[in-house]
Length: 99
Image (cartoon, rainbow, N blue to C red; front, side, top):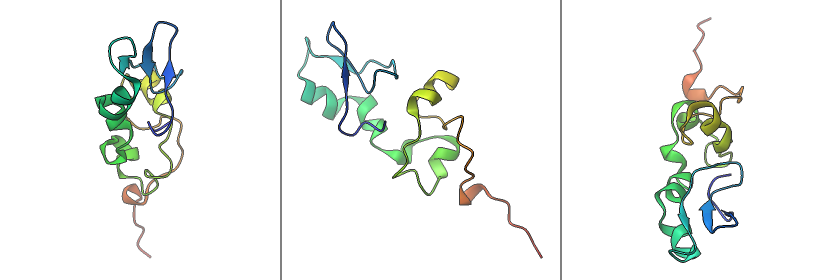
């Protein structure tokens, strides 16, 4: 889930990036869905991988992966934090060995 092409709308009109990410972006009873999707800071952040934090923020695959923003939120309270179960170590964080 990276805020591209998907939204979840609750039975009372609340808009979320996903049914698994309980971060409200707006309500369709108060503003048009297209406006929420395009202008909400939550959706804008999710569509900008350069704003990811931790190892996700420096990962060379952040533009194609997106990681699990819902797991990051569940574990840290911040949907922009690193994916907690990712085992990949980005090149920027690997230690160089000398031979």
